[in-house]
Amino acid sequence: MSDNTPTETDLASHEPTDYVFPTLTADQLARIVPHGQRRTISAGEVLVEAGDPNVPCFVVISGRLDVVRRDGSSELLIASHGPGQFSGEANMISGRRALFQVRVRTGGEVVRLERGQVSTLVEDEAEIGAILMRAFILRRIELVTNAVGDAVLLGSQNSAATLRAREFLSRNGHPYTYIDVDRDPDTEVLLQRFHVDVGDVPVLICRSERVLKNPTNQEIAECLGFNDAIDRTHVRDLVVVGAGPAGLAAAVYGASEGLDVLVLESTAPGGQAGASSRIENYLGFPTGSSGQELAGRAYTQAQKFGAQIMIAGGAAELTCSRKPYSIRTDSGSVVSARTVVVATGAQYRKPAVQDLSRFEGAGVYYAATTMEAQLCSGEEIIIVGGGNSAGQAAVFLA
Image (tube, rainbow, N blue to C red; front, side, top):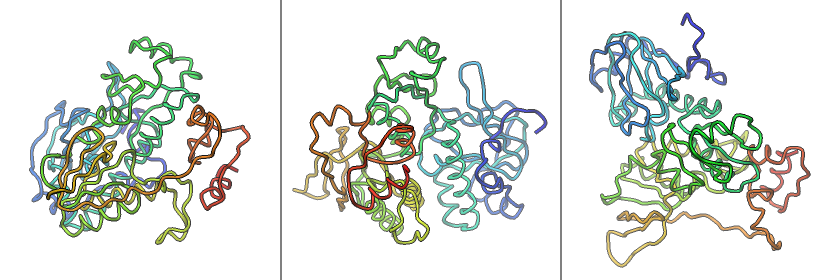
């Protein structure tokens, strides 16, 4: 590009550009065409609007597509895709809403692939599938790393609810911008714009349209469309309760054998393991892995095989008196299944300290990730516990 407008390549500073923005060969393009629909595009045409529930992937034969984040009258160019390149990121796997607008800069021709067609392509063409999956995942990682998304969270480091919202967004891999009302001098202008005050924090702004004051995890998931693609009406072959390592493993094995799988998770994939700063005793990772990395890989693997994961939709009640079994979720919806696997993990004891709950999330934490490390920067820290997690937390924080 000849101008200085930022592109998605600028955001992708941690991975080789060929991985994040690969250019497909003529042979690869020819193999993709039968899986989608060829169509002409005209300059200025909007192919995807931010917030759209159904997000196709566009493979560019000729012309150029721009991926744009719009905020009122201003725009940020996120990506520009030319011939042989393709649009899309992790929502092509998860089925979540579009984060950004996709607009035609230069007219030409594209191949339009619906989400189901992308899944078929990934299964039928292993080489091309690997290129697409890797690019989708790495693009989302870069968006998260650079805090470029469709949500803004206003909060305070002294607010336990703010920490909960940040952890929920981060552990679910949703890119967002965080503004600390105690430290950012421009906060007052933003608060006035959306008619909220400091006492309302945390405040979540979705796509510059909807404002949520101190939202629950369920409200955040609903606002950002985490579960829009999930059909709650048909009977599943398998419902897994809990998306920790065991639950995700059950989802992977079931879905890879062709079963229709739904996972119910009250918070975020990974469970207790997902909040670990470092896991070094897990099979298959000789050099160790963070809990977030492990959870993310397992989550993507389950979705690759067709499993769906309902976020902020934990199981509240299981009815086994007749088949198919029925499970009522925290939100009140009911899902049915021929088989249910319960993988709800463990519940850990808390220290018998008076008024402990007053300080949970605001001085007392049950994880030692990068987020907690930032909140405790420059402070003296006491770690309670003597197991592997406590030792890893001590090393990480030190």
